[in-house]
Length: 126
Image 1: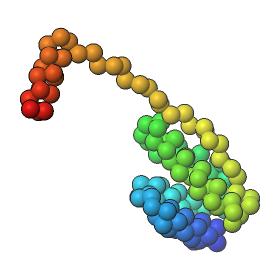
Image 2 (image 1 turned 180 degrees about the horizontal axis):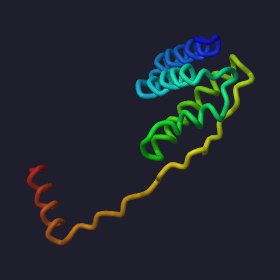
Image 3 (image 1 turned 45 degrees about the horizontal axis):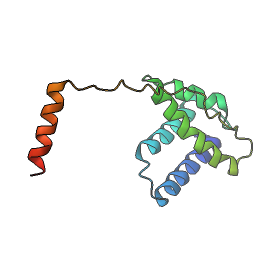
Image 4 (image 1 turned 90 degrees about the horizontal axis):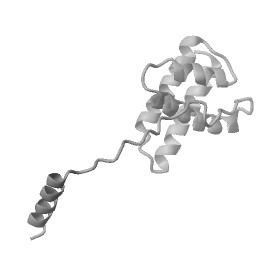
């Protein structure tokens, strides 16, 4: 384990503790941060924490575009925290990965479905 990996792991754990102390569940995000530390260790990357490091990590997983955007968002906020301790840490772009914001089309009820819904409501509130 390199000095940078040790430093990164310690800061990740402190950040996770901070988020917990602020009332966040932060369980999936904690898993993402710990996976990032393992990624840095396996790849034998050295300081400072860079954009390329974060992008490579986010892209190293399969899955939907929203998953990559979520992982990158977790790292972006962690990098902001990390920059307090290592000023060489590069800032991550807020919109490096687009999110799918597709809005499903509205469900239009037929006359029979609407009548059934109204009847069900009457039964419940009697």
